[in-house]
Amino acid sequence: MSLMDKRISEIHEQLHNGELKVSDVVGESISRIKEVDGKVHAFLSVNEEEAQNQAAALDEKLAGTDERGLLFGLPMGIKDNILTKGLTTTCASQILSNFEPIHNATVVENLDQADAVTIGKCNMDEFAMGSSNENSSFKVTRNPWDTDRVPGGSSGGSAAAVASGEVLFSLGSDTGGSIRQPASYCGVVGLKPTYGRVSRFGLVAFASSLEQIGPITRTVEDNAYVMQTIAGHDKMDSTSADVEIDDYLSALTGDITDLKIAVPKEYLGEGVDEGVRESVQEALRELERLGATWEEVSLPHSKYAVAAYYLLASSEASANLARFDGIRYGVRVENESSLLETYKKSRSEGFGDEVKRRIMLGTFALSSGYYDAYYKKAQQARTLIKQDFDDILADYDVIVGPTAPTVAFKVGEQIDDPLTMYANDILTIPMNLAGVPAISVPCGFSEGLPVGLQIIGKHFDESTVYRVAHAYEQATEHYKTRPNLEGGASS
Amino acid sequence: MARLTKEQVEHVAHLARLDLSDDEVERMTTQLDDIIGFAELLNELDTANVEPTSHVLDVKNVVREDERRPSSDREDVLKNAPDQQDGQVKVPSVLE
Image 1: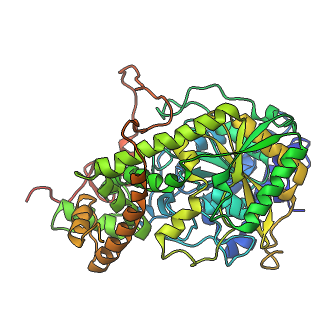
Image 2: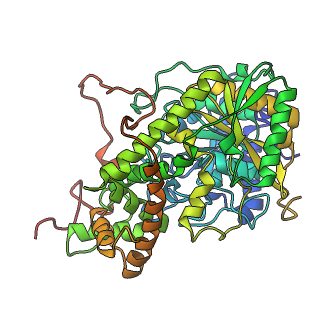
Image 3: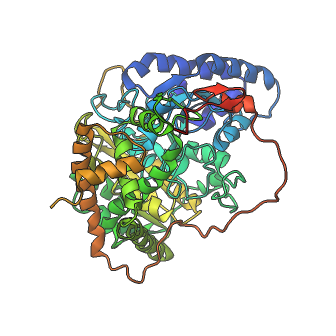
């Protein structure tokens, strides 16, 4: 068994009692990347030398003492839209291909304080816009379960890196499903925290009112360890919430007796593959066996979520991405004729198709004469969608459904049709609009590919989300089935 | 029925500071038209008395004392600038 297949607590124990050194764990992560990343392409850059130096320093630093945090010495991958001081951070875009951050994101700072080791930066859809990783301007990450298929997106590199055992955990960001959908496609655990729970300082902004950074891990327990380290108020992010953080580990009791679950009928209806539906229905039976009860409910405004999301996210993106003009950082394409032409050339050559499309959509929706009809209308739809969640979560502890309507699709299958691609996020977008926390946890296989179960909670109640996910995971142990990268596709 | 014309797409591209090729304008006109057509699904909703939501949490303005504190080093900030001169970011000529 590879070290990378172990749980964080097992590695921690072995580091603690001297059976393992940090250099062993980091070394194994790097050799696994050398072995499989030529097939998976999860990493845009690997920080080999620095990671090994850090490992040696950590081994020395705490030799003979007991002062080791839970993430001490553990190898991690960071999505390439999260700033890492001195480590190139590209957002998988040509326009930032040479960008070296001068400070860390708050989450990276927190993980550094905990002595976790950054192994490298994970591939993604350019500026987190996409559901397949095919919008990366550098390479396409492949699904470790079947390398003809996409890993999902936009945090596809982060999910594939964990699924293929390259790192023990990774960070992704989720604007409309970008942590949960790739976690579902790759058979790993991914949490989108409550909006405001985790600092966004140092996350390159795409849609500021929707996105959150969150952990991707093999197990729910591992996820809770990482979340405990990154959650909390940050004075550098004025939208981060000053709300007490629960002890997530103590929530992992395995007891969900009398828990009330709502199952929206809209989440198991048309457009959801039969195999996905069956896996989720079987999961509901398992949750019942564990003592929970569930009832069918309705979130009547579900069908408006994708439309509202694309207007709002693109509008915010058109404003946020205005900063990339080739002046202060990034790639400048000189045009001596004027400053305006330099902006235009730098942006046109620096951004890929999907990013341009969304900037255009957002600029249109915010432009004079269209603002009320599109942007404001979408914000009003958002109110109704959020109200749906408030109503249901007043009566139930959690909402449960699939994470994505299908399993991972093939590379190239949807890339030419933006609207089909957007529909992949139909079950994950509403939670970003409502700001509620949601996790994807593996719930079996369809066509030999992983299916994700989505568990959604009340604002700031990640504890209950974790409790349900953990109880289900421990009863089913789907996480123990691993992709087989040596022999090609699994199943 | 087309909601968007090529001329509108060209105007929006200018607002967005994008220089699109003829091919891109053509493709973008069709694709944006499709996406906007899809988004018009929202017109089914009666939102006459619905407040818009820009933010899910009840966030207020966050203020701090107006005190001097160190900012990033000039040298650090200029490290990523494509062009610089005398400790400043150099840009193409702004005035004609």
